[in-house]
Amino acid sequence: MAEKTSVTKQEHLDQLRHSTTHVMAQAVQELFPGTKLTIGPPIEDGFYYDFDSEHRFVPEDLPKIEARMREITKEKHPFVMSTHDAAEARAFWEKRGEKYKVEIIDDLKQPAVTYCSHGSFVDLCRGGHVESTGDIHHFKLLKISGSYWRGDEKREQLQRIYGTAWDSKEDLDAYLKRLEEASKRDHRELGPRLNLFTILPEDIGPGLIFWLPKGATLRRIIEEYLRELLEKNQYQFVVTPHIASSELWKTSGHWDFYQDSMFPVMTLENREYLLKPMNCPGHIQIYKHGLHSYRELPIRITEMGTVYRNERTGVMHGLMRVRGFTQDDAHIFCRPDQMASEVEHILDLTLTVLKTFGFTDYQVSLSTRPEKYVGTLENWERAEKALAGAIAGKGLESDIDAGGGAFYGPKIDLKIKDCLGRYWQCSTVQIDFNLPERFKMGYRAETGGEERPVMVHRALLGSLERFIGILIEQYAGAFPLWLAPVQIKVLTITDRQNAYAQQVTDQLTVAGFRVEADLSNEKIGAKIRTSTMEKIPYVLVVGDKEVEAGTVAVSKYPRENKGTPTLADFIAQTLAELKARS
Image 1 (cartoon, one colour):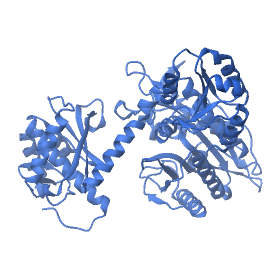
Image 2 (image 1 turned 180 degrees about the vertical axis):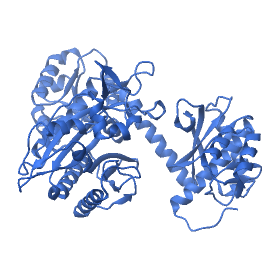
Image 3 (image 1 turned 90 degrees about the horizontal axis):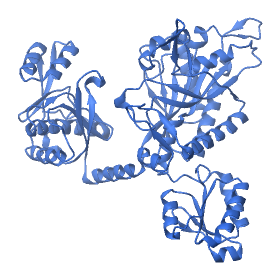
Image 4 (image 1 turned 30 degrees about the horizontal axis):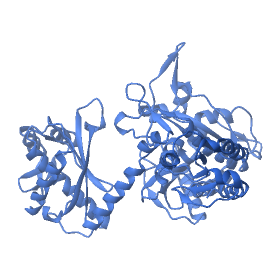
């Protein structure tokens, strides 16, 4: 029987969800004989189990599986852990035809393995369960998706069933409500519907984003804001090529440590080239273009740099996980004595940028040396100390992600919290002693000798694609005025107002707004509904009264009546709102 130990609330939920996966696996095998088991872990807010079954699961199967699960929970079978000789266990699972369990036992290479059983059901399991199936009350199966065994698209294709389990009906209902709201905000639905972007189908180019005019406008707004901010903070903008010789990536270490995520080699004139997965080596080449003195440092180089990573088909997800994306990337080359102050400066910039986009709640973590790393322990310790000091210097709370650093250096990661309580990894700052050494970088020291600069990697937003996906979901596509691709739409009631509406549109455009006019002969109700669906911040309706008075009838999304000011007054008020980026 499961041992009673003191656990945190999250540990208890993990145990509850892990136990629910076992109950689901039993129900699936009973309802669909011949189904083979693979693995079924708890995950954030839920669980899943991957099955190999000749039956093709459909949404209509989920209520049937749930019903059988409820019967099993009412039987109150205790969860019982037991230990077995590995050779005997292998024979046991092989006799059952459970080839995936046999493979797991072979991979473990241990003299003994553990099972968990409840009632007539048994599974290979390391443990972590509630007392009995009777402790499982509040659960829901959510969806079905495809997966591959061991995440390898060359292996067997499996079917994954997702679910969630909670301690109370209130918690379950609240979570399902959050899921419903998240579905309404799904950027994969809203983005194409709002004409922001489209993603190529699998037979043309999965994971590659095509930005439509409105989406390209949104990107430009973000990039212009960042360019203005960074130029004020003495960053220099550069542009580097999308491909480079494989020798560059061998020198940087990416060839050895990152090759699985890089696209295959291209050969031209007996030389190997690679699509860049990172901007760092290119920025190093720019630094090395000239000689540098200690007086010039820090040198801050930045680029909206597009990179390419060979993500597996199964992990790509809208804008959040793609194969080609643009980073607001920067690299600071500084003296060792400037390292801590540069990190603090980056943290200041990061918090300013996130607040501007409406994110004020975040988690900070310090990721330390991983198992596979390059460089000396002394430099790793110096870098980790500098990052920890910068976090403390800004008065930020943080946790430690032990072993979570990059192969070349430790890092600080910021996860932003959105309006649904979800956390997203965006901003990062990393200290790197390794690449300056590998590329033999230098600067003329005050003593006259040559010294190595410290390289600080940083991204404020991370990938533009991912960040825009987060923004779409944060605002449900209804962007604040300063970000909206179309800020104002002018609507006419009849053709008689067309000339005046065009004058209004022209004046708004001259004032600096992004404006559209709908002069069609559609009824005004239909025009208003269309502009509401487009989530445009301001709609100005002009009829005969407005033409005569020189005014506009203003409504603000989601169609709040704001009166009928003169056009001059509306422009002045709205320019103030635009300037505040509220």
